[in-house]
Picture (cartoon, one colour):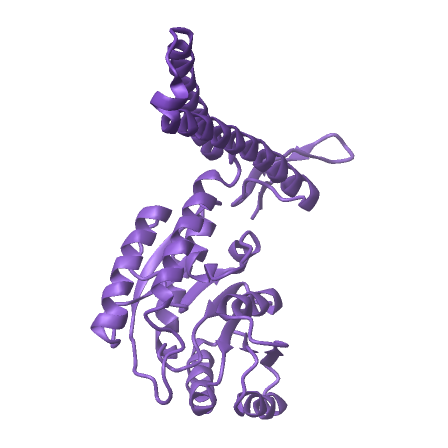
Length: 331
């Protein structure tokens, strides 16, 4: 079964056309499917149009959020409601062509866990969208270790079990492949078409570039130090303690020799004390981080690993003592 999740916000002009194209493509696949629209508090007639469609199509589900929570939250709400073995997400402005869905599913059928769209020929403005996006994608690839050329697109297909291991918040939806890679997800990139919007303008601008930069720093920390924060804070803390301790030791020796260190090395003494205190604070932050991570994993019952499958060969003992050896596989 396929689940198609579409977050929307004021996409009234595109909804009916998107629905027609989407259902046409899905019917050709000859597979059971559901379509989940997540209305992120639209102020136009988007919800009204979707409600009318819902009355005539039992495979359609509409989720209306109480306020505008953003795209990541809308996707998360759709993923939580999805019942399919494969979940496909795409935007509701028709810049993602539903005709590309079979290409994404082909990669899933080949054994990949995530098929990520790649807008090979983008139609956006070069200065405000293309160049910043290219730089951001390069930084994301380096920070996450996943060689994708287009992290920003929502158009992706996922195996449903992969999404269960990923908790979304902030604006981390573009990093789902990177977050899933922590649990061994296999990711493929698929070229997709980038069609122009039929109406309205993009909800994103140049200002988002700065937020993306902060997200890159966040994802780098999460991927490398989430389960071992002491490795990050502890290294900084020990460095500060060592440097501050050396400075203060040097000043102590000079003081013993009779030098007035307040007059001669006042700023240096201040810097040494500050480094020592900052180092101690970083070190204790690492210890607190370790306690928080331990509490998080133990209280939530979360695992720090993910099993792809389990295979075993067991002897099934019968009443007469004879046995058989079936090959059992548990995905």
